[in-house]
Length: 24
Image 1 (cartoon, rainbow, N blue to C red):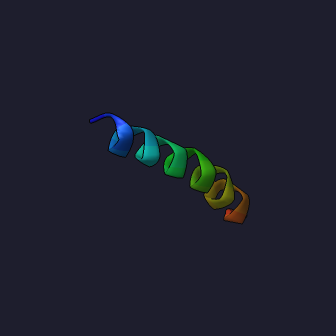
Image 2: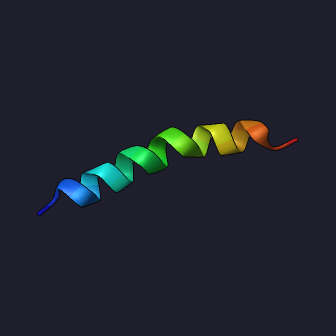
């Protein structure tokens, strides 16, 4: 039941630094 939540958190934590790095 918690798998989708953990997957979403992992995806968030992996994409957020990339998004921040893309900012000027």
